[in-house]
Length: 146
Image 1: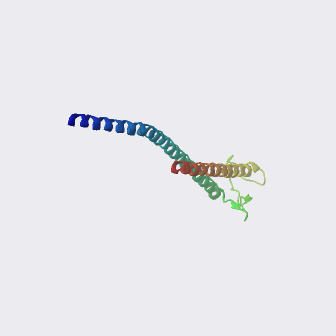
Image 2 (image 1 turned 30 degrees about the horizontal axis):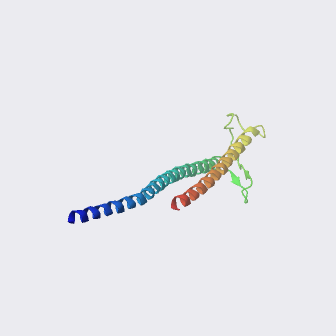
Image 3 (image 1 turned 90 degrees about the vertical axis):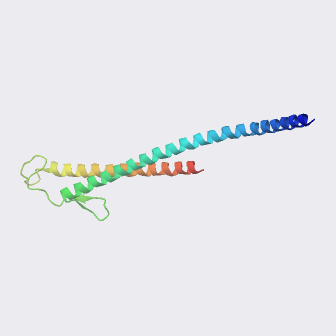
């Protein structure tokens, strides 16, 4: 009779175990899927942060380039930063190595203006990319944390 009770208890435990196991299987699967998704989202966040860092470096480099041009040519900006002037022309044209006489070396001024405008354009472009990348990082952080 004790053996029958033990068999009945073991059968009941097996049924309980089977029921619990069948309840845990979908939960384990969901946990595995959520963990995988979190890993992918975290990896994407790291990629976007790296991209953002590169964009920040590009902006810094472009800003340094403009600063270097400003110092090299003595560029003076208007108060509203909408225009600039080149205060002095050198005695020897750095473009063609000829003496600077009158307006005969307009190419020097044009080259300086082109270099400055190109540098300003690079800054605008890098700043735009950085803003976009920062927005992507912020959205991805929200996605990872939810």
